[in-house]
Amino acid sequence: DKGGWSSFMAKEVSEQPDAVANTLRGRIVDGVVVIPELAEFGDEALARIRRIVIIACGTAAYAGQVAKYAIEKWAKVPVDVELSHEFRYRDPVIENDTLVVSISQSGETMDTLMAVKYAREAGAVAISICNTQGATIPRESNAVIYTHAGPEVAVASTKAFVAQIAALYLFALHLARVRGTLGSAELLEHTAELQAIPEKIATTLLQGDAVRQLATWMTDSRAVLFLGRHVGFPIALEGALKLKELAYIHAEGFAAGELKHGPIALIEPGQPVFVVVPSPRGSAHLHPKVVSNIQEIRARGARVIVIAEQGDAAVLPFADTVIHIPLAAPLFEPLLAVVPLQLFAMELATAKGLDVDQPRNLAKSVTVE
Ligand code: BG6
Image (cartoon, rainbow, N blue to C red; front, side, top):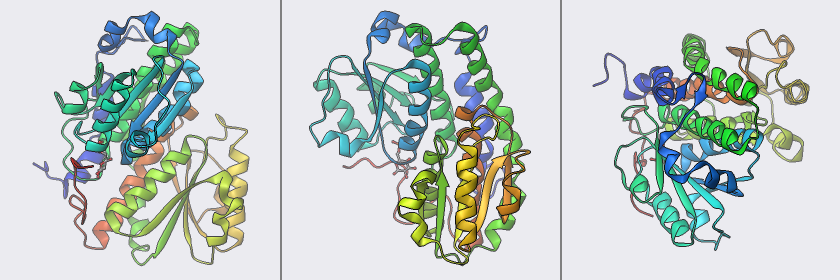
């Protein structure tokens, strides 16, 4: 039931505040993250972990890429993020102090399932982040942290993605506490930031009309580029994936720092480029670098659409369109910045008369390798 929405995707995008709130519910007690699902490991075992390998496919892999920044910063454990099918078939080094974290909305993606089985046979402990109760991947794992996004029907993942990041951030904060890598004041601060996210996503969703207008003049675009830096990089990749999946437009995401190492050659007059801009307050060292990237592409005629923090005046002179997101600490910006990119892909596909829930050639759950 679409509940009055034009598509399941429109409904699911709108449900993102609840997807995050429900994933946090019961897991924060007096401002402290508590994950009973991890109790069986014991805190000492989690404290001994030397390396984390995150395995997933598609949008779930981008959630993993976002979480890498938070886990390394907060819990000080090295994190590799790998596509399940690449991990499984390259003889990866797995040791018994390696923790494998799989991410899967369906819990049935065959590539990820095979990678989890492989890792466990090689002696790793496996935790599953999953949105589907009792699915195969959680059953094959040592423990599961369920996301509570509710059933996701549209093929393109949206609310599951933000719920995955929320669950991974809970995990990162839990890990930081048991490993003693963050003090209690910092733990409380980050946990409070996480709890504020549902309301900020709701505010971001109010940009829907601005995004729809943008989509209407872009229906003839042949290619769209997405730039992002730090946690904005996986969001650029996700924005590009959504556009490919839904609107069948060639789209590529790049790390903004790579611009001068190649992608800038693609910039010609009229080329649309989305830029996810880090906060000028929270990322004072990165913000000017990304603004300078914007100037470089603008000087070559790019049509620049900027996703920037409310009040970021530095981007205004160089942007053709600015989409604002609420203020958040840098690691939390992905949960907001992804929303206009999801909406954009959905609106552009809709403007082209395409089926946003069932894009051609794609399946919601890929149960073959
Ligand atoms: C793809 C879906 O086939 O599988 C994507 O189209 C999804 O939306 C990916 O991100 C991974 O699926 P899952 O269920 O393992 O998260």
